[in-house]
Length: 639
Image (cartoon, rainbow, N blue to C red; front, side, top):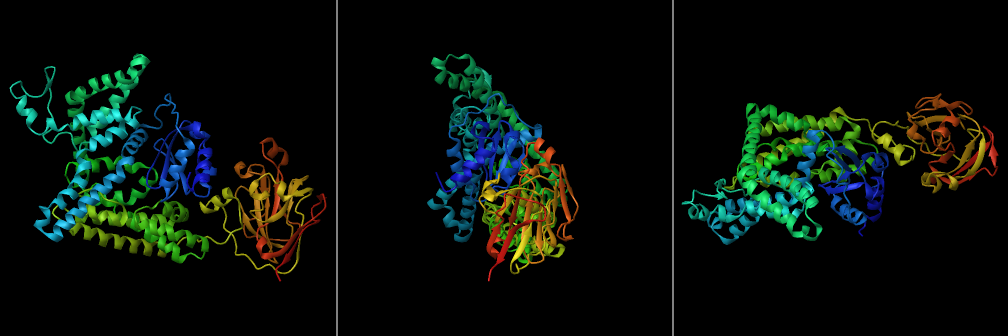
């Protein structure tokens, strides 16, 4: 396995184990699971897992956002999963739109990268033809570039035949066989028409059919419908054909029925549907291009977050595969640069070193069109920078439509998408427009995010991952700046109870000392008191934990129970507020120990010095039990 072995094992475990996974695909930044039961996945644990940006649930998919290195993580996850055993009794999930988005993304995700590469190759060929003149256009080199760019689009149904048949639960190579019949050159090079002209043209057992002048090469809808029917037919035939001959008779009869039916009915009908949908989308753009661009530009990042952008991408691919330029995705082009500009503003404005460090890779990946690290890790948790980028996206989307920018072939993301705006004749006008618009987007995104500002992350007590996530998502509190510890200090017991070593805590994060040194009290009372004079540094809305800083600089975390954050404040009552000044013995938090235990949670109280590295020594009491106000921990500051 690779370097992400441990992460892969943890991800598989927290999605409910191998037995809960029906299917797995990935896009540029996300692992997209199809789970048998999403309720078995530990979403909160995954969101707080090192190496995981966040988790999204949309379109019937359980999406674990990883980042730019998702393909490497996917390899290790595949190794952990091994051969999957899908539950064939599990039907489609979600409403019809969710099912449509899930179907489209499952079909096109695997081939989007080579489609983009082919489009970029065509763009490079156009640039070379423009730069080198007509002589290059007639050269073998031009022909090779052309083959690399056009070959995939010409045989696109074969690629889709594989991915669509797999998506519909059929045999992928049988899908390729059906597709290869549709693009069979003998039907479109004129020889078939001439050969069968006297018999009335193409027919199947006397039933006439026609093929589009350009054939079914580069089409999308006919092969999707054909494989949907073929997969259904294959499953039914597998139930009735004896096992001894199933291996070859099932594909034989599936192809025998599906291919002629596609030529006779499915193909012509789906071409009509495809043309109709394309005309409808074109009509929406034509009705008010500026308004269309503004709406799509503003909402594009939200659509991407939930995977809903897949509803538009196939129609752009259809147009491009038929040699028609399209503006359907034009408004989305500069949005990633608006987001990147907002990240730059956060990076330069924040006083938090950790946030500044996280912003650097998010900014770099944004230049290449990958914005999930920026969205989930930087702008969305701070809200204002995210909406600033959406507002800028609306303006750039409207401007791009006003300028008439179109896509002439598929392209990459971010700065790699410029080749998609180069005309087949090599005219780079729209590519230059795109570059200037991207520059304006990153500048405007930066300026607007800087002007409207955001709540900066101040240094916090070191918390568990789940608690830290509450802070990062805006659901937790902010904290005051730490003070420098001052000489020796005595920490008094905040509650009565039995004292046990920290290594025996019921949570590994505490037990391993990852949050600092301290001890555990098994409480015999239900009221936590202030252990020194100081300030409330952190108080969670769930009231299960409180962070204090003494007047001498000791940072102390009092965590009531294990995993009690999940009680969402039930059975807890706080007597202080965030940033309140407290005196030794003041009431802090009351809790119902009996009810917490009934709910299935431990009530032990880890008490941690979270700025442990600032001290020369931390000495816990040796007494087996304490009363509130007894000496508990002595801290000795660095010389």
